[in-house]
Image 1: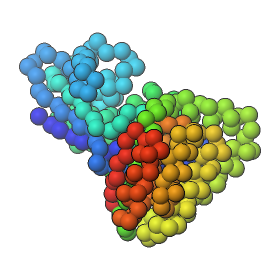
Image 2 (image 1 turned 90 degrees about the horizontal axis):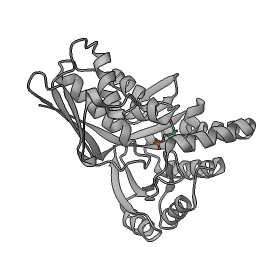
Image 3 (image 1 turned 30 degrees about the horizontal axis):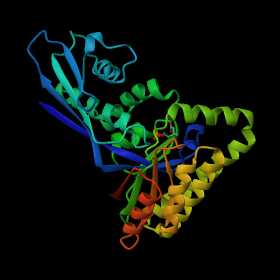
Image 4 (image 1 turned 90 degrees about the vertical axis):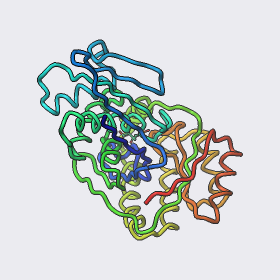
Length: 310
Ligand code: PMV
């Protein structure tokens, strides 16, 4: 039996702008994760995929061509240049990452699957190859993903990312205490990214300026993260949130949670991911973490979790 896990992620700076070639920063979140288990079955059984959280079981041979899990299996086999009959295995997937909330649940499940299946079949793929394989799956349900989700999840390290140009992992000097609040509102990345594209096409100059400013925030955010300058980091998060609201991807519930966190003493707060729901993140310290958690719950968050990013 082979087991692999993959973390969740949050985007600290630059979501949406990253689609337009601007810099973004994402970090892995390890208190929730996706797990894939691969078990041998008797010869001739074929490949079965079990999505344990969804109570669903499907045979690879019967799965639709756009089924994300089956696609992850097929892309992995292609990557391994597997030319025999499909492997006789059961692949079981589990995840504690909230779905459609900007935490990369889909990319994490695919990453765990690609890693576990390739290792079970005798090949350890490196992080870049795992990421590239997952990216092919991501394209199925995101349309035009920037690739930041699969990259940060495969590398499981803080990541400075410029699409098709520059990718670098880096270390944090001081761990970040971050509160992650779930608005409880599921949001489709594909739909929000599509709306932003339509707005950009209608008014390219305005939106290019917003993307440029977001990219500059990511560039300034990296040294602040590396040097543990948390006050500066918080201010950059607030600035990024203002730009995201100008972009039209915030929402009244996101705004309520951001304001509640700021009033309760967070150093900064913003949405994370596609927006219009999903997750709101707030930078806190030991003194403010309980008050911020309480304030975000009071303001209507469905759940609030404290996590340490290192
Ligand atoms: O999938 P989410 O909600 O984490 O959002 C992805 C971030 C975007 O920048 C909005 C899209 C992308 O492909 O980078």
